[in-house]
Length: 382
Image (cartoon, rainbow, N blue to C red; front, side):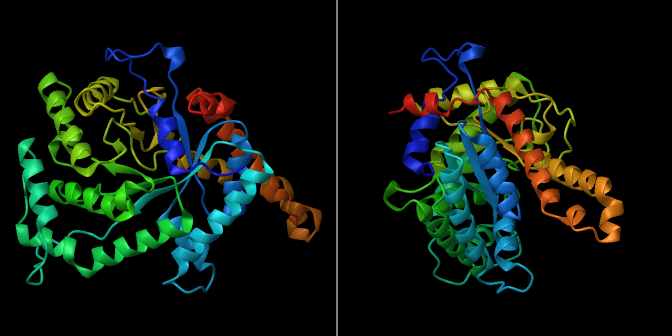
């Protein structure tokens, strides 16, 4: 068994399209979502539990830059090389787990690869290339997204050492990890920079059009991102998201539908299905291709809008599950641990943690409609 490649994942995602050629939604029993679960440190616990749970189910196994850094740094590692070491370790371990658990449809992904903060007072060095920036300003103006800061501040960001170093680091991580999917986190950047960075990163990570699928984030772009539900607002949002995806050539997109990062399980956040349906339908009609929507903050969702959500990111749910399992295990063994009994201090503590995370992952896979369907999904694109 091998990890899914980017090309194979593209075919699988294209086949997931919840819309009929007419633009109507497919029947509910024909729609499904892919689970994306985060492999946190220690990878031997989280990644193994998630791959074991996947088995004959499709799964995105993803890691943030922070998770890679922690795994690579350890207690006193080389900070500069930590993220690369973490990427190498994750790739090695996941390949081993995929082979061991015979999981045929696991895709590695990079999640929330954060970029440097924007400084609106910065000024560029003379002679910087502003071509992508000019095109981004034009693309934003067409759909009414204002250029809130100066041209020089934007150019200083794109040409500055912090952004250029972040881009080089991400390119190196992608080369080491070879993920099928990369999410570039532009949530906190102003509209013009979000457009420009998404395109620039896409070109850097996919030279000649070859490379991982790219997820772009429309999250923090102006008032549209959290606008009202009247038809004018929805139409404006759909046009803006479509312009963003077209400009960046992204394969998938994230935008606000009422979720919240880091929300506790059962927070009950209601997904805005009208917004989701309007934007997703418009994307398909205007671009002539399926652009999966990625739901961030899936832990706190009241329910999953199966199919309309192409990829459902779950992280907090598994962290909470693991912590609670560890707490319960220690509570049961507390007296023996305090007395120094070997059995009560054994690896059984961590095995119970893995079993709890795996059980939670299977529940989430069942929610997506893909539990046990890896072979069926793969066969459809052979």
